[in-house]
Length: 122
Image 1 (cartoon, rainbow, N blue to C red):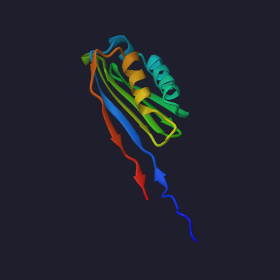
Image 2: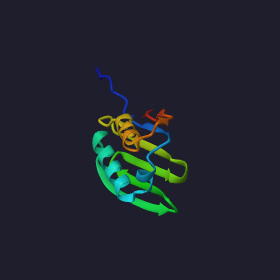
Image 3: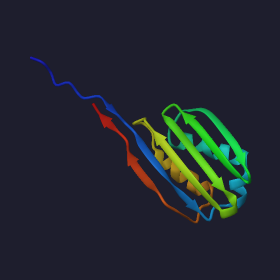
């Protein structure tokens, strides 16, 4: 008699949004933003592999590659605005916690949050 074979599942959870009325000085600070992303990876129980950042005018883009996928922040200090994307393929991770950590550290007075379940069963 054959047993029931469970279907493999790929877990994919994405939390992303726009942050408004953020702390202008933080939005310009490359090193501070890198620290925030590093800590967000820890808060979300993700394994940081690499981090790159670019100063673009007054704004900054930070891209972190985590073992489970990525975390990004893009800032526009002239508008006190940032976008954040946290995507994880690990069931053990919490991209929502990582996203909310970033919201708090950028001192956003308001924000939008979107969640996408990108999991798949085969």
